[in-house]
Length: 91
Image (cartoon, helix red, strand yellow):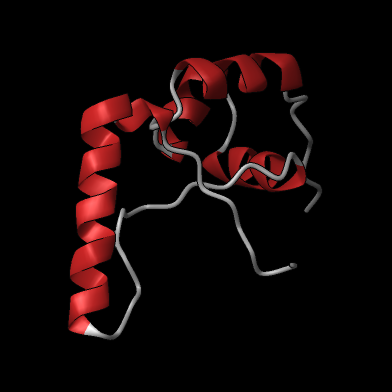
């Protein structure tokens, strides 16, 4: 059984990610006309990731509450669309 490759329009994908950052893989794939797995691997290759939740990871209750207050104030001041997440695994 031989599979065929459908060419993915990378520029269209990049444009869609900028215009609709919260879009699901299935919705994005349907719009572009490819399999959701193709979108997943393309985003991975483009080093685009999405954090699913806004939350503080501090174990200490007081520190976690401070973190939530800071986050809430930031969102009030700048809006939720201004949030940028940096993956610090490789630092």
